[in-house]
Image (cartoon, rainbow, N blue to C red; front, side):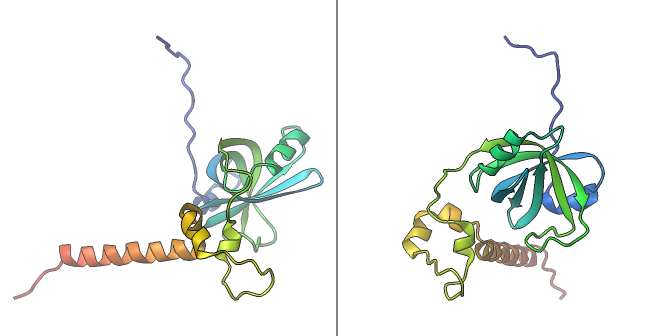
Length: 183
């Protein structure tokens, strides 16, 4: 029988929308999916996604982060689930590409929880584009969308449909449960 006498401190995760309350309050744990990542010199910018919320994370070579860590983080496949220990800091300029525009995460540790395949059948940003959009002419067939429904349901449009459906179900249920007749 294994008996551990040393208790591990539990990781308390913070959701992306709550990070504004943790600015300059020390280290926080955040779990999410890798939306995009790109390296530039000795830095790596990572967009972390939780459902429809996104936040920018930055790794820069310093006394805590090595060049190998930056390279490792750059090569984590999109849609992989990761845990990040980071410090939430406010930014001087708005981050236009994320839903959290006033906060970014300065990463100290990255752990891959579930690595996605390197080659996914469809990319979320491609599936999110309207079919008649200008720019890249990438069209995803209905068969590909249905065969990979788990990925297709992560698009913002499908997330919004589910939220509306859940809200309408809640409204109709609450009306039937709390209906009072005055006679």
